[in-house]
Image 1: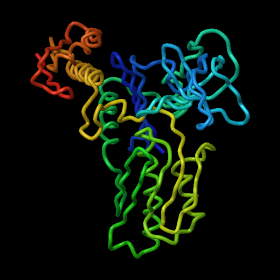
Image 2: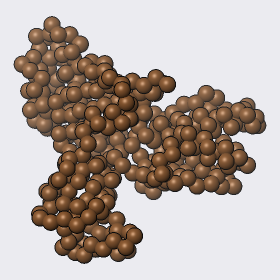
Image 3: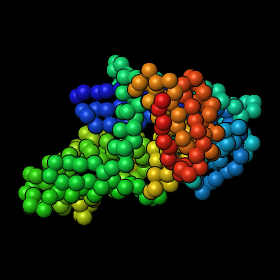
Image 4: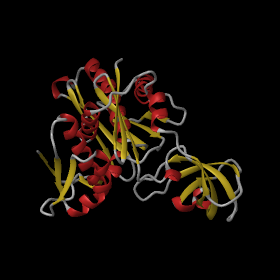
Length: 340
């Protein structure tokens, strides 16, 4: 198995992409806008703000970082006002607050104790021993990974649709009609489909309940479970269910990081960037152009005034050849680069 790591350090954002056997599998983003207390793995002192017995937990105040939900199971008790040490196990997503786990009692005001593991540490765990590629190639790889996350995976002889709703992730694996009656082709396509679905879900940073509509019915349950574990892994937090009589496999994946589309887009369907993310992309594009031709005296990006104001401090870090020009004829997600 070939593993490649790409690391793009553009002012305002550190972005790492991991590609295995030619397919992107992870896209990690560490932004200067991140609240350090709500990043995965961060430890803080929190104050219990509100009990939530119906959810078997409580809402806690993290201080300047806002609030989080803390699960209380196994006889744990944390009355309102109690100070507790917690660790983030699931970052913010959609309308859900971060989720933290109880570590033990604490004292003092809510505050960050230990920041989240740096991106380099996460890379060393996911791709041990691989030296990251940097520079222009890393920027291109990051763009390619984002583009890959927007498309449905493809398998030989069939197709896959991977979609997320508010309640769950759904996967539909299909085989070409002329192969539907052939058991061997069906089983092979299901195995390939599980691998590609797992890769797409990891790249998009999704979790929760997953329903996979396999090709056909009457499956060998043990064989499907083995293939699913080969695709999604044997993490003890993953819960695998049986294949039901309709040919649907269900499993539950742990939520960890904020979904990729929620980081990038204000409207994922239109792929419209948040203004601050649009500013980040303008900065990255200017950096790419500067790296592409070091003889250029000046690289200017035209973008909406709101984006230009957000991007200005980032672009200034690229040096005297990097410039911005406000242009409100462009939409938030648009920019035009002019090189001299």
